[in-house]
Amino acid sequence: MHKIIHYRNKCIGCGVCYEQQPELWRMSKKDGKATLIKGLGKKDVYILDITNAEIEKSQEVAEACPVRIIRVQ
Amino acid sequence: MKQKQAEVLAPAGSFDSLQAAINAGADSIYFGVEQLNMRTRSAGTFSIEDIKEISSICKANGLKSYITLNTVMYEHDMQLLKTILKEVKKQGVDAVIASDFSVFEYCNQLGIPLHISTQANVSNIESVQFFSRFADVIVLARELTLKQVEHITKEIKRKEIKGPSGELVKIEIFVHGALCMAVSGKCYMSLHTQNASANRGACVQNCRRPYIVTDAETGEQLMIDNEYIMSPKDLCTIDILDQVIASGVDVLKIEGRTKGAEYVQVVTDCYREARNAVYEKTFSKEKTDAWKKEMEKVYNRGFWEGYYLGRKLGEWTPQPGSAATEKKIYIGKGNKYYPKIGIGEFILESGSLKIGDTLMVTGPKCGMYKERIEKLVVNGIDGPEAMKGDKITFPFATKVSASDKLYKIVEAANA
Image (cartoon, rainbow over all chains, first blue to last red; front, side, top):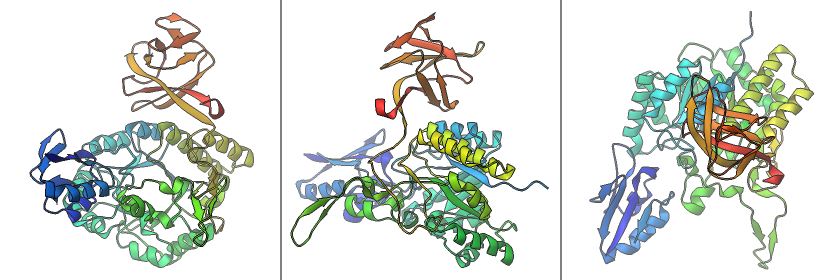
């Protein structure tokens, strides 16, 4: 099973993840940072299991993140 | 009547740098919090919770504090922006530096003084007139000549252009620090190559690298020797500070929120002395040479005077990083303080230190402290040299903690 790992505290709120993959990401109204929808978090690191169909797009998003805080593994 | 002196405005990207600016006698400092400032990626960014402490430290030391909220703002940033501005208002930060109109709007609603950022690229008196509805201080574009700056300051007086406070609008210009190949920071290079927008504070500084030119017809490649053709040298106006002040500017801004406390302290100190010398009419070439030599010791990409004297094209750096004549080598950290006798204890984590070496400490309480070692106390007894694992003690004016970093200063060629 693949998963997305999001190191949220370093997010600069550019919104590229949400623009490219709105089904998994939203922009927090509270602090302007990206939030991994349904991601399980501990100490600002959020993890979400993804399906095989979501891997490619998620990898593109990870690549597009300007501060490289999204990982797919 | 005493002439009102131009204000020296220093960068504070950390508590160490904030104290360094205070030590150097800055009149004011600027800082950023969270992700809505132009140094989001590179500076150890402060959080909203830090605003209170920064503001209170500045007030206690008689400095003004300005907060930068000068990125491009998106819809999803509005709540964070409001939260920050409410705290700014509550803690009495003196002004907000911004270029996005949403910030103007909220500052207006909350009654917070506003400064127009250089990101707004203000280059003429009509723009000053327009922004004077919102702001009392305007930072001009960094590409203007001093003649153009002078025209603007004279026109402000002639036309009596006043800001919301009812006072004449003040003009601020950058006097020292990094320049960008793009007009006043409006750069898309980092965005195009790494998707990292400079205008969201995420610049990866790829302009600072060497490049190869390829002939599209033949495919032949030419390496450009000795010049980093998109990386300008740093702005340094200390040679011409008399002319800068004569142009009628009110605020002298130093760039460098990502740079170390030693940079902030040395550069701010030099510009404060130079500013004073101009007003006291003791400004001279001997002095400017000495200040410049001092500033060459800390982070710099080589100096030029920017566009102020009418130069059309930038001077490019001949090296990838700093050309500083001194280098700092991290060797340890603060361990203990004996307040009754004013002695600090530091522990060496690597390297060594001997009599005759120069040590430097940077930290949130001391800012930057530097001295040549005449006497060395190692593990409680006099000794010629301290090695990794040793504890050294010496007189120290401020409280020492693990946040204090101990460095050895060496000439750059020996680093």
